[in-house]
Length: 474
Image 1 (cartoon, rainbow, N blue to C red):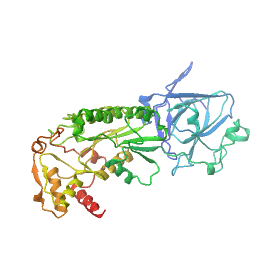
Image 2: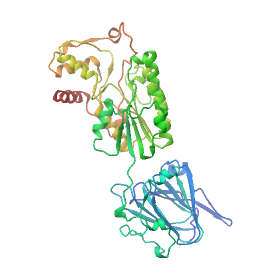
Image 3: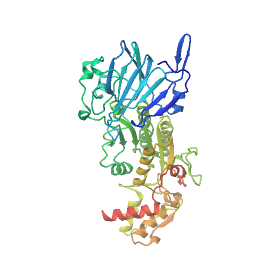
Image 4: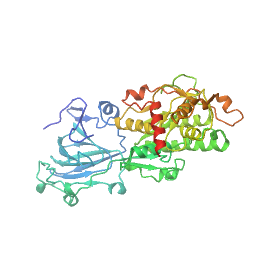
C-alpha cells in the first residue's frame, strides 16, 4: 500500500477515546520522493487540533517488521506520526472515567498522524522493515515523569487488540511483556484544579461548591504565598490543569498608605506575574478574579471591552494584574463587585447594627449590584465546565442596581427594623476627615456576555433574603 499524495489536511475526533484525534496529512510526492509538513501549528489548530505547545521531539527507529512497543500512557499529550515505513497503531484509554479501557486501532503511514491525550496508552507494531516513528510531546522527559507512567500488557484479553503479527512472533522488550492486565491497572488520575486564596469569601464558597471532589485542591496564603518565588518554583505543577486565583489584597483604603501600597502591588501584581509565568510554562488555565475598581465609575454600565480607568491604588493593582493575566493563553478574568459571602462583609455588618438598634448613615451615591460568593463560584465553575472562550467576563447577581443605602435598608426591613433607621449620605460626606481611597460611583457591570454562555445567577434581592435567612439559622 503506497502513500496517498495530496490529500487535504483534516482532523477527525475518535469517538471511543475522548480528546483523541486522527490527522490526515497532505504529502507531496514526485520522482525524488515525498515531502510533508509533519507539524504545522497554525494550520492544524485551525483544523481543530488542540494547541498543545510541544517542547520535545523523539524518534523511534525499528529495524524489522514486527517490532512492537507499548502500551504506555505518559503524563503529557503526544502527537505521533510515521517518518518512514508503516505501522499498526493501538491506543487504550487508561485515564480514570467512563472511557477507561476503550481502545482504537489504525494502520498508519507517513500521511497519517494521531493526537494522543495525556493518560491514553500508546502502542504500535511495525509492518515493514526500517520504520521510524515520531513522538512530539508537550513536556520534557525526566526520571520523575517516567515514574508517573501507566502501563498495560500488549496481550491483555479484555481489550483484545488484534495485532497483525502475533505477539509470540513479534519483537518485544521484556518490560513490555511484563506489564499488567487491565484489571490490575490503576487509572491515571485526572489533572486537578488548584484554588488559591481558599480562606477568603470566594475561597470558602468554592470549598462548599467542590466539597467531596478529589480533583479540586485548596491552598490558603499560609500554604501558597503568591508573592514568594520559591513557592512557585517548588510546586510540581504537572498534576494540575487549572488554577483559580481567589486571593488578593483587598484593603482598599489601606492601599493608599505607604505600607499598604507595597503590599497591594506585591499581592495583586508581582504575585500574579509569578503565577501567570507558572501557568504559561505548564500550559495551565488561569482563572483570575478582578474588580469593578478597575473603572472610574463614569459610565452607567461597564462592559468587558471598556478601557480600564482606575482611581486608586487598589484599582490600579487590579488593572495591572488583569494585563498580566491576559498574556496567559488559557485564561478567564472574572470582574465582580460588592462580594458577600462567609466572613466579614457589608451585609453582615448592617445586620449586626440592625440587631443592636443602631441607626447608621450609609452612602447613597455609589450604585452597583451585590455578588454573592456562592453565585460567583458557580459562575466560575460554569466557565470552566462549558469551556467558554478565554477572556474577560463580568459576574454579579442580576437585578435593579442599587446603592449601599438601599442594601442597608433591605437588610433592616428583612430583620423587622424600620428602613427609616438608615440615613443616606454622600460619599464625600461619609469620608470627610477620613483617609480613604477614591471609589467608583457607578459599579454596575454588564452581564450580557456571561449570560450568553448560559449562566445567570440568582436575582440579587432574592439572594440577599436567602443569605439573611441562612445567617439567622446559624
